[in-house]
Length: 461
Ligand SMILES: Cc1cc2nc3c(=O)[nH]c(=O)nc-3n(C[C@H](O)[C@H](O)[C@H](O)COP(=O)(O)OP(=O)(O)OC[C@H]3O[C@@H](n4cnc5c(N)ncnc54)[C@H](O)[C@@H]3O)c2cc1C
Image (cartoon, rainbow, N blue to C red):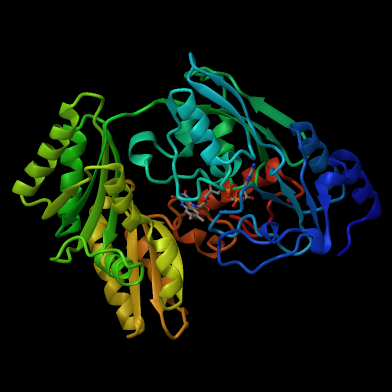
């Protein structure tokens, strides 16, 4: 459906000719995010430069009832930013930059289109650390991180994006700007609406500016690659380390045996432990500037080995070792390409049910197809499993039901950190009650009565 001429003219007037593209001039990156959704050509690509321009664009779209899809770095894995038929793509790509670092309040004010890696670099240059880190750091944006409440590899220490945001500026579906960018830790003056926007996946408003919390820089980082014979042992080791290292633990990532087989066979990484344990862990802790930090970390791991909670542990002696250890955890980005076709999931399972859930998953997948196998890894400390089911037949029917039934049985979540988007929408009812879905629907109707923003993401269109 072509856009009405008067809407087109009004949009062009707001963003200028440099901010509008249509048809074949729309780059491939704006047609699909990093998920398995099919590519979609938006009716128009609009790239505003300021919050006021975003507001004017949304007011025009609301007036003409034009559906809008919001786009950040396009690294989302739930299909939320992939354009659907007739949608205007509103990209934050021209709204980038760190506006202020306040070293006293320990905050950073950032435009929503700024890549996460830039935020991390600027924080480090100022002697601080930004607490969220994930593999897509070079491309994903702060606005996208806020919209998806992104997690990543340091949630154990710093929490998800939600915990790292002091305040927000956002534009609502009708073009009204709402802003709360106060540098105060405590603020119980009414509803904290900013938290409502975090994790709303662009369905309630467009995030344009973010006030981030900065953390003190860490030093004395120690990294180990460890073998554990069972999930129970790994979780007992986690609890012991949390108690012993006094909040210094940064990451506790787990890779199950099938994952390690793929990482070593497909990605050519050396087999780290001859015994092929059930779990390989990447454990990282900030031990402080003192020279005894290294020793204390080694002692803590040795104790866990003596007690039989860890079967083996390799401690990084150099930055190169650290990179080698993390290479196992990041190998999945590469080895998926060489495995039989697969379907991917990002779920939460309560820690007490984790071992049972993985055992049941293996059984049920095998029962469904003799040629299928699971790859399981993830942020174990956050009860978050990333898993994929592969089958050379390419027939994935029934796989999603196996995974999400298991999630329901174990009272987990169908989306731990990637969001619901379009891909997981049919399964939302498996981790949310009728009452919760009704509440979400009424919030959406109140904030976006014309249903123009990211229509069909999270909730039915
Ligand atoms: C290699 C790789 C590793 C990843 N690792 C992790 C991980 O460890 N943890 C994790 O949580 N995720 C991870 N992801 C997923 C993804 O990076 C995150 O979801 C990220 O937060 C998306 O940011 P983005 O800017 O790319 O958003 P996009 O993909 O552009 O958009 C994601 C969603 O947010 C909406 N949106 C984007 N910008 C805004 C805005 N300014 N205002 C309102 N809505 C907006 C979009 O409409 C869409 O619904 C990974 C992805 C890849 C490809």
